[in-house]
Image (cartoon, rainbow, N blue to C red; front, side, top):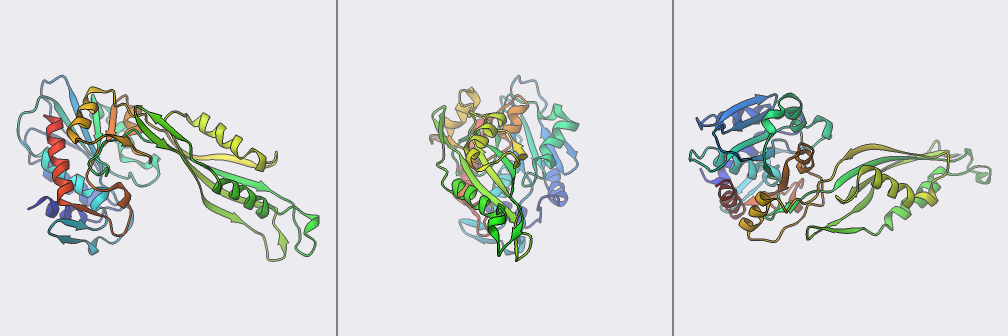
Length: 349
């Protein structure tokens, strides 16, 4: 089968987050075709490793799950596969399986990680599950996370901070609003300030990270004839790798300071740490050179941050346009799969 056909076979297996069992079984069987791989199944996660005597170990990881959607609508053209997960990231998974099954000596040891539940809350991540139950399987000198990057090294990632804000008011009859304080109106002013946010741009290792601040949920109101005394919103802040959680939160509180009173509340709902570019690492620098393209920053969050927590230098590199991820018409091309396969095989030696 062609690479696109191999990817189509994976796309046709429904693996929305939490439902990766069938795909994990297909991946496990494929990896066991290479007798020189030690294959281990941990829940719906599959890890395969060479276990020779080389002193360097490289790791390649990809997630099995997709966002919700209909896998039956996938279509295959001569040079393109369109369908749920084609870009994010079953095209790259197909290439990973192909390269993992190549039975040839390499100058390094290689670990292949196929993990579940990346597209939902980080606490449920299969990568964290492996790290908790079998941290030895994740040991490596450098790692590639096969997120869609269009064949360009996308270095590091931004952190993501989600906060819940609760603004207080004072109830009154809507016929006599001067007797109260409208919390929804207060929230409107705060949201206007958020919409006027000018992104901060940070350059690290020659790549630029652009921060973002967005309101993602709002809630308020009591009854049609009541001035509301409570209004809530949720904000998502994408944080460049030069700021910690505490620094990002301190900046956000200061930015919203004129719109917050002492009785209001701002609480962290979720935080995923950032990861710096780490392009000074020799192995990651070699990947940049093999890609024949200048690196750029990963402005979203990915599990390169998880690998950093494990002490492993990592970067994002995979097939597919990242701007297509999570769209109903996402696709990957045969040229993108071929380029990813060539560079990945060369990187592993």
